[in-house]
Length: 391
Image (cartoon, rainbow, N blue to C red; front, side, top):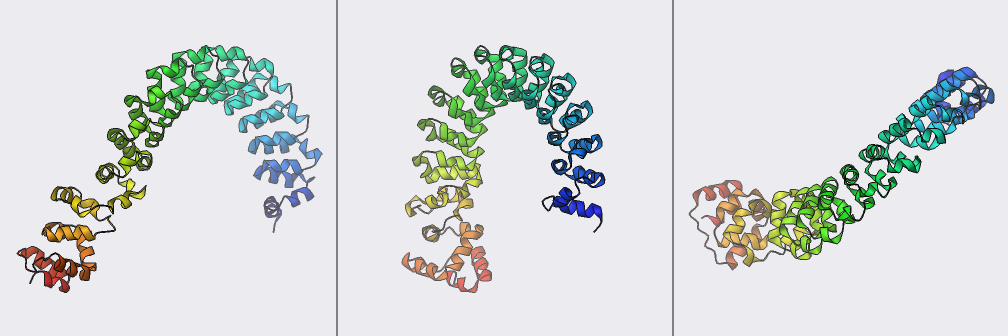
């Protein structure tokens, strides 16, 4: 195994070889190029070697933590580190944390690194704007004077709506600011003023961005059908936060189910047990077959609930029934052979349950002679045991 392979192997084996070769510059350069954190294992002399330090921080900005004090004061080394990871600014010398070029490079890479800048640069408008544009939440680390600066706050909330948390109460009452925040993240409504939480335009923008923000809005809007419809259209699962009257409203629930089949879980018990409503749900979102008690409810269908219209309109879902006994009894008794013929699932079920079929024919006193030649030929060719039906 050559030196390079030994080095790479050691990187995967607790770095013991690097510790053993901690004074060997060639070994260390190869190692930190692959894994900058290995700089922590090398000798003090090589931690003070600019070439080694630059190689490490270019691949892993946080390696700046392990370079010598002298190199933490080196503009080239620190700049390379923060360009890789802005948060490496925390390991720079106090002097360089007050260097505008260094700090701008850091916050441009990671806005939250503003917290490590000098107090002087935290008060610098260019630095603050660069930071909040990259990460709105970096507003938290600015002097409070910026909490009331509408220009900066707008930059912040447009990048991250939750930055509204760090604005002044005055701007939390500013409709333009709050709208910008909730349009980025509907949950930011939590930090809006009480007055704007009662503004329908703001609430509509909120649930349009995130239907689940319905959780945070006042009860009066949870009873507003316009608001609830927008919310469930954006995220069907927000139905769980709607008022009870809308969880039993077919229009609202259907919109929710269309978006997310699982939303049926939050419909009222009455709707979840309404077989005919379940059919409507299935027609707009076939995924509900995997949710809730869809099959269970269909297996509760009673023979009296079958009729020609129901059968003809819902043939495509009849095969989901596990209890088909009553269904095929209805079909046979009413001579619905066209449906049997057209629906492969039903015809296959009847074939697979031939003995039960014969018993049903006897119990229902159905004649064993039929005049449908097409069906007669179909069953004769498909399965000889069906000849009894058409002799």
